[in-house]
Amino acid sequence: MTRFVGQFVLVLMAGVIVLVGGLLLSPDGTGPTPAFAEANRVTFPPLDQLKHYTTVRRGVTREHMLTSQAALDAIKAGKQVPSGTHVVLVDYQSDVLTRYLVAQKMGDGIDDWQYQWFWPDQSVKTDENIAQCYSCHQRSRRERQFMFTFSDALAFDGSPPS
Image 1 (cartoon, rainbow, N blue to C red):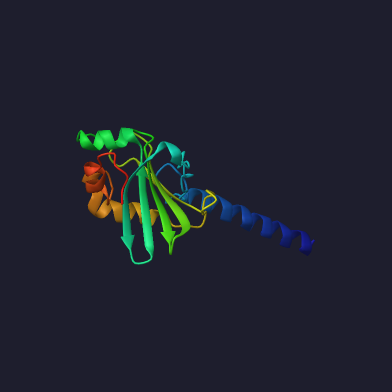
Image 2 (tube, one colour):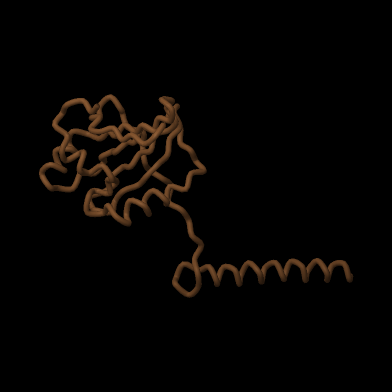
């Protein structure tokens, strides 16, 4: 009998813990809600359809910047780039392809950008903190399509970058 009472108390306590946890985490605003990260929707773009509009060099780092002609046209016209636009940083370290950093415009709003880090084989680096990308670009580049190379895109005349 004592064993049964002990098991009953244990089950009852577990139920109370679940009930209290459910109330504290309820989505109706009566308590904190758990944070669920949105699955990243950034896709790897067809690189052969993008324009290489500038190259940034810093020491052993060489970064080729690519985007679509439609994005370049929008930038030159003073408009927002279209939804679906990719901006790709192709990162070379000592002339070895290291990674691709991809920004993709996911909607029509100015802030509708998501970022993703891809390995050279174009697979996603799943443990990368991509919130850092948005944070850095948002601090100083919001009015420039979140691009550090906005001036280069604006000045691009179709000639291959040096």
